[in-house]
Image 1 (cartoon, helix red, strand yellow):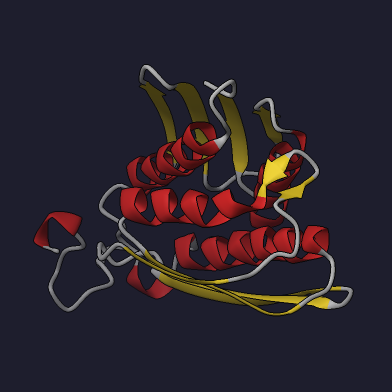
Image 2 (tube, helix red, strand yellow):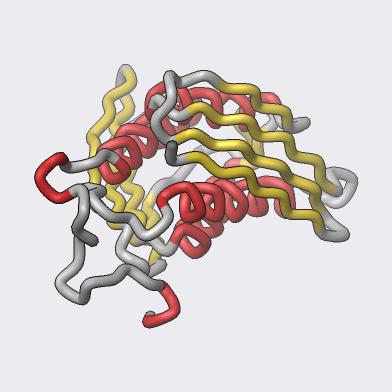
Length: 200
């Protein structure tokens, strides 16, 4: 079973994540930011990941620490659950339409952390979520998983639709990247013979 439990506590946040990569899309998300909860729920459902995430943070300051640290811990949880990454596809991508919006997300779990992010929003807040922090979430995730993550938002009117399309495309891309390839279950998908972000 590709599962993990991860807990990260600092003076700013306290976040616990339980993850099963080969799940059914069950979730229990508890942060104090309603729209952010909805995005993480969509991620779990569309990626078929069983995900429990409980996050508390210094929201009296602002949302930055909580949202970014949720990305950090979620990346750590995937890294731990994937182990040596034998047999995984490694790379995944998805183009997700949502009404007038279109999101493109690609992922390469190669041990080389990098984020390419191009998405703009008209409003500073969507629901309760500070839209400026969507990029910080993905940055924290990419670095702590050791993955190249590309997020593009070429079309869209509604900020709600744009962000939701991004998270659904992210879920599908991660599902593809984490999926096991039956022909190479004993192989690490790299000509180096290992995937290790300490080499980066």
